[in-house]
Image (tube, rainbow, N blue to C red):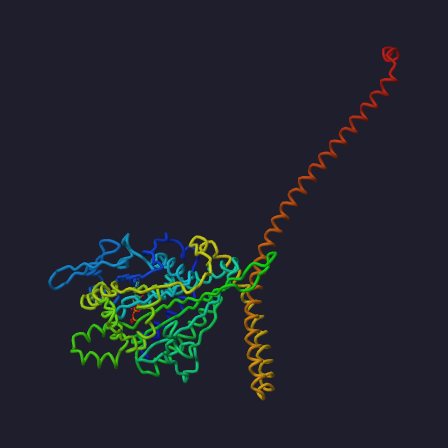
Length: 541
Ligand SMILES: Nc1ncnc2c1ncn2[C@@H]1O[C@H](COP(=O)(O)OP(=O)(O)OP(=O)(O)O)[C@@H](O)[C@H]1O
């Protein structure tokens, strides 16, 4: 594999391994991108221009070159043609200026996430399928925006942190959330499951008539804390490096797709403060896609159609087909058949490009490369015409609203709950191992009769559901217990205070009565002395 690529994958893994502080996370005022509502929406289009790279500075004798791109207002991007000096303006939902950190309008990763995060999070928890795609030529800042760096975490780690925090908040409202994580790479029309060490398992894309295309045999792993996400990312990146070495190509020619699926279950109230039965369920997902560098797609446009198809097929068919789908979708002709199935990428993204999804596409551009940038901006201009039809995937599950401010406050409680989670997971692992051993022992004896094996399967399903419920109940009770303990300790402080106060009062009362007694005794002594007192003898002295 290309050494730059290995360095990049390592960078991605190291970057998110570092926890970011609450201040870093929420230092910027949230400014949301225009809200996406529960109807037909256009795909939201964002454009971000990156700073000059060291090699570009070197080429300009260390001086910052003049950017060909400018963003005179938050929704406008202009591009200067260096040959003709003509300037072309484009209008998008949001234009993000990250050219020079010294500029007042400079937007860093944290600020960028604070604009995008609240909507992504709210839509996911409201039950919508959500998608964020990063598109752009090589080195335009796609991975930097999606994954980020040590001090500037990108959208993916920041979003996962916030999803986990919202999951904790939901538990308190008796909504059990289960989050699963999958990580695939699409290269040369093949899906590589990056979480499966056994690469002999083939992952084909199939279509469910209700929910659309999905990847068969995909490993989806439950995550309930940030450390688990980091481990999976590490594992995925390790497989990604090996896979690209085997393919003898650069992985910048591959697309990375992270999918987070959220299952929410609301439990009814039981008499008292307990948990009743599960009432409603809802499933939604978010796809976070870091596309392969688009520069070759642009170059192929110089060739004739046949040549372009050939190159698309051998180098990066997916991007060529994505471009074709986008052109056809932008024409908004209902009769046109969109060739989603012509590539694995577009097949996987079918729902996100034209179906049930709230989709946002980020176009990363270089400030100096006129040819590539104009291609990307023209492409973005087409994308903004595309409409999707998002519906919340639920019947009537009232969700726990996402409160950005609450999430800020919940930072410390999450760390505490993560500690609890370790304990819960260890217990769960032990019980699962026991369950598995039992099941293996049982299955040996029950294989003899089919009837018995069905019974056993049903029993296992029941046990699985029951153990999920028990786990949730445990978490809920733990939270209630923590709340009660807090209340008890507050009461204890009040009791201590009242006790101290009473003791002080009693002491004062005792001192008072002692004083009264002393005065009484003195009065008595004086009285007795007065009785004995003889003025004549006193005068004679
Ligand atoms: N907004 C930004 N601020 C600071 N540095 C950036 C920014 N965007 C990109 N960079 C830097 O530019 C370089 C290339 O960025 P990145 O690796 O994210 O590009 P890419 O589009 O993912 O490339 P590829 O298609 O090859 O995977 C990196 O060194 C990164 O640190």
